[in-house]
Amino acid sequence: DREDNTIEVIASQFFSRKVTLHSIQTGPNPRVVFQKTIDDKCGAAFGAVLANLDPSPVDPTVLDSGSTVPSLQEGDAFSHILVTSHECTETSRRSNRMGATIDVSTGSDSSDDLKNGGALFAYRVPRGKGWKTKPWSRSTVASGFQVQHQLNNMIHPGAPGFVYSFFPTREKKKPKQRPLLAVAGDCSESAYLFRPTEYDGSSCTEDQESPRAVDPSTQYKLMCEIQCKATVGSIAIGYEDFMHADQENGYAKLYIPCYEKGKILVFAMGSGEDGT
Image 1 (cartoon, one colour):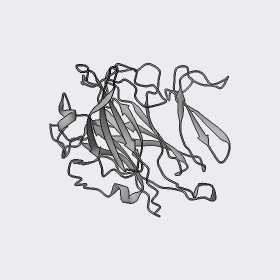
Image 2 (tube, one colour; image 1 turned 60 degrees about the horizontal axis):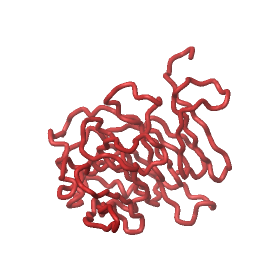
Image 3 (spheres, helix red, strand yellow; image 1 turned 90 degrees about the vertical axis):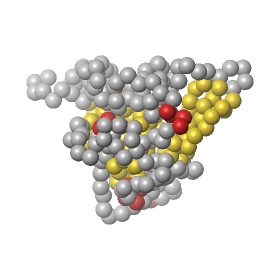
Image 4 (tube, helix red, strand yellow; image 1 turned 180 degrees about the vertical axis):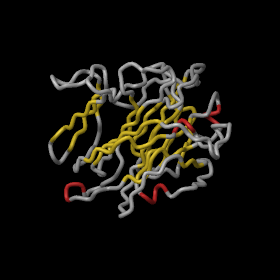
């Protein structure tokens, strides 16, 4: 909030299995002056980052996005909190379901996302002062991340790991361009890329902050899965040219570590046009 002397810290609490917000009053004697549980039915919340999935004027601004990929700078606006729920469920059935929205104030979930493995959630920040009093609607961006059990990851395995928002080029091509999402699968032994997609409008209400509304900004589809057959704990993203390899300038490079194999895989994005 630009109008007060507090900063808000949003935490994904793994062992407490919840997402929380704390307001810290700045000054010579900092202290917590307000606290709120955003969601206590999210499972083992692992990573949390700020993201601007709805590039329109919004109230809150970034101090630190919490991500190692600085797609949002200090002072930028953000609309959502992205949280990975690091579950260690293993089943023979795998799914990637998108767009299920629940009312986190009551926990009335219309899906069984956490029964099918880990999930990626997006929480919309209520407008204005509503972040203190209104429920934060939770949407399921993707679910069904499964642990691939091996001898090397038998102690506290889980999936997915961290999530990152980024753009395919250093400079956005459109003012209201939504970011791509990258997810480190951790013990799912894969990395995942998601691209934004348009919502068809069915069952959508005009009020995006309604707990039962489908949030169009959180509609994403799996762009590709990079199967590494090793633990993928994190992902790095940059835009500088990678050595002397054939590549298009200015496009994102993804650096994906394969822990047990002692390797780092590098993937370069491009325009998709031939002859470049």
